[in-house]
Image 1 (cartoon, rainbow, N blue to C red):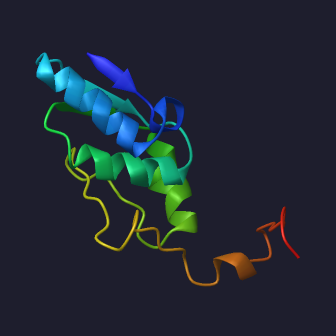
Image 2: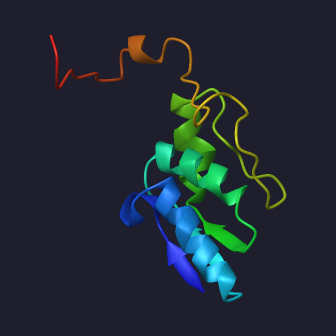
Length: 112
């Protein structure tokens, strides 16, 4: 089995190449997604596009509890399946008022 993490291997395109090469030799692939929520969104999209995906390793508290705090449409696993958002790009949709919440610290690291 070929296992990869999109943040370590070079992103979505590189992950697709790994899966395609493994598929040439009938090798199943799996993804590691224990990073942030953007990794989860990207991995869900790629998982929907590869034919030799065996499974996606994920962290239940991340997608079930943490991600919905930030995103209105965090992909959720239901009966072992997950669907990617159908919005443009990765489909990220921040919760309304997220950046106005008192308990959230927003720091500007570049620009004016």
